[in-house]
Image (tube, rainbow, N blue to C red; front, side):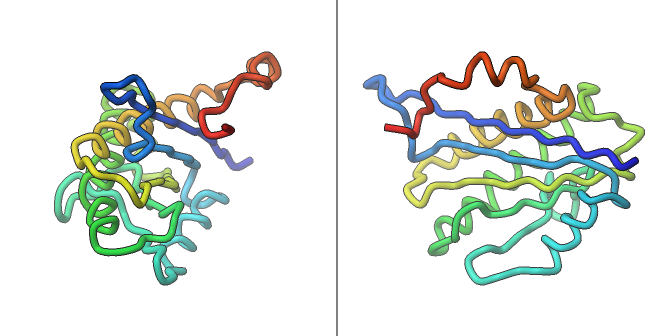
Length: 172
């Protein structure tokens, strides 16, 4: 039986005036699983099937050093212009890769599976994003949270039912 872990992480900071900084929000959706299972198929398809405005890329800790488990980043919005592309290939890419490696170091992701598993990671960068340090920080935190949630299989269905009427930050 193939394993697939599913995780989500959302990080929104407050501005100085107390309002939400929606420009630099980070929202991560990810799948974790073996290369020879459905996550591996999704991983390969993401790298092989590129489209205009949706350039999927490997998460790298630094040039020529991919993270492990190997992680493909999927753009969740159409990349419009070089600023947004550079934010994905710069601070977001470094944040995701380092969060994956730090999750291995912390034992959240099993080191013994680093060469056998892959991660498919959807990354949201708003067209209005304007602070590379916040893009890095928020995507790092959101990726670590999504990995933690995936590996803990959290939330449970009982937690979901209990919080189903909780306000969503984007519903207004």
